[in-house]
Amino acid sequence: MSRQLKKTKPLIQVFCEGESEQAYTDFLKKQFEDVAVIKRPKAPGVFDEADDLFKKNVRYKNSAEVTDEIWFFFDVETKDIGKWNDRLVIINRLRKLRKNPNIRVRLLMTTGCMEYWLMLHYKMYAPPLQTVAEKERVIAEVTTKESTYSKGNQQATFRIAQNYPTAVKNAEKTMKNLLPDGLPGLEDSDVRNQWLCTMCKTFSSVYEAIRYLENLKNE
Image (cartoon, rainbow, N blue to C red; front, side, top):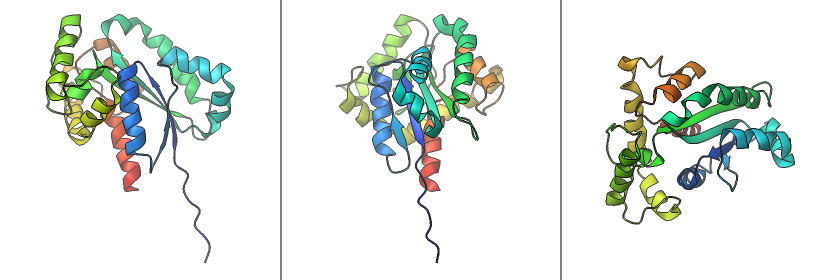
């Protein structure tokens, strides 16, 4: 009988906008370590930082051929609307670092602030999230659920993240609710993501990354 080769876990490089995203990434790394290898740089930074690392850092350059996915974990804000075209140039460049198949690039986006994604772990709602006051209200709400929470607090973030199945369901609803507003479709595409990054409606797409990891568990 021929011996079956053990399937290699996909390698996922995650670039986080801030400490809260880093803490949540560390939860995903631990929660899904049996099906994926999730890595992130120590310092926060998203598109420009990733582009720079894969161009100049030997470790990243050498890992490009075995990198299956690159994730950008960041907030969607009105101040960044004009950055989409430059970001898409970087996304396309990163995709081509690996051939047959290309590297998959996922955008883990949440409107306004990471804490809205955290609140979806408890309830479904879609408040406006563009002003400082609106974001501060959501951050305050998180502390009513987890009193020790602060940005980058890993232990508090891990406790919140345990409810991720609820967040996945709620976040999926936030996306479906945007279809009547003109969302081009639910499928992950550059056209859809441009709409999400420039219209600044309230949503979170983080659930798509978790669905992917869950599917790996079920294979």
